[in-house]
Image 1 (cartoon, one colour):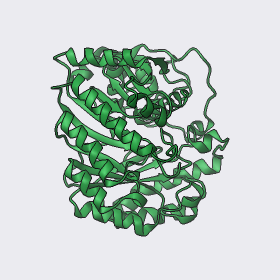
Image 2 (tube, helix red, strand yellow):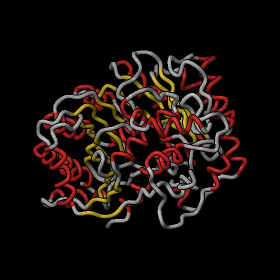
Image 3 (cartoon, helix red, strand yellow):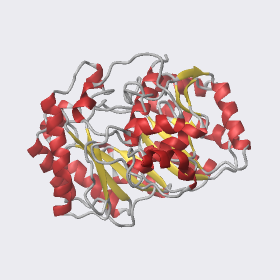
Image 4 (cartoon, one colour):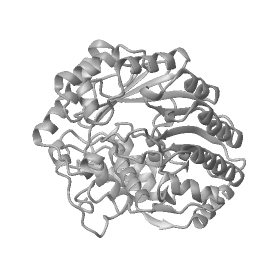
Length: 451
């Protein structure tokens, strides 16, 4: 259990290294030749934003001059054509569209990309991210026409002073309400994201944002903690004080009681035992599928990521992200070459261990095949009291990363990385979703390492 003393600063040797586009294409070719391979998730990454929000952890950039978006769209279509030929006949089980800001594109451009994906891989249930300020009825209608059933609005806060501090002043309550209601009218299932603890947010102002959001016709609400580590604010030197961390913890602690008093959710049916990092609430319509793309990264299976900055994976092989800027990626594709990738090696046992740790931390471990594969190890953890009833007991010093290290036999990275005091102040076991987020942050940093 001591193999990973700092799960976030040193997350299980999950390091990204460069590889050629030709090697990457060869791996997908081998993937396509394995007849027993399960279904494929398709992830389209549209990295451009009008402004870069200072809390963003992942891959986003501003368009590099006139025509940049048009060239990127053309490159996306060509890459979808190429992958469609390479993976012909493989079923796509889900489609995710993320960024960046997918709704920064105009309706015709969105339609062209989604149409190319549908033409090459067939229809599949889809989910898309959207910015309330750039969402229009026309864009949502294009999404619906191409199978997008779920839309997630990254609202984060409804406090004007906070939005101004994080480069999101163009987001108003009127725009949020219009976007949510329009999506609802079109029959889409709507999720809204809120972040607890953004700079300038108070417990009272966050509660106002939460209560206002609950008045909207939403089907899901994700309330998460703002983590400065890995964000532009963090890279510029900002750190959270103990008072900042305590305030965010109070916001999250109050959230569940407010949600259940204003609009009791169908899921989770009871108050979660631990809300240190956030909770997702759902209301029956039915319970939302597909969910977040991060769950596809935790679950077994492969994710074909198309675009600059989007993280994908080949099951039992590696996670990957295209190296370099969106403009460089588009130029490479339009020139008929294969973009260089950054890859992080994994294996079947590690991925199975990640899945088991996720089930344990969500209290959902059962006798599934992946759990049976670790029966001896899980029985040992039960006998020593590390697990109680297939769960981590309250107050456990053991977290998801420790479970993954123990089950998979994976050790930490050889290099030293500074610990992040922010996480020590929060305390408590780290959920697998946060480890996935840390991996995605590393992928984003790896992508930026290129020209």
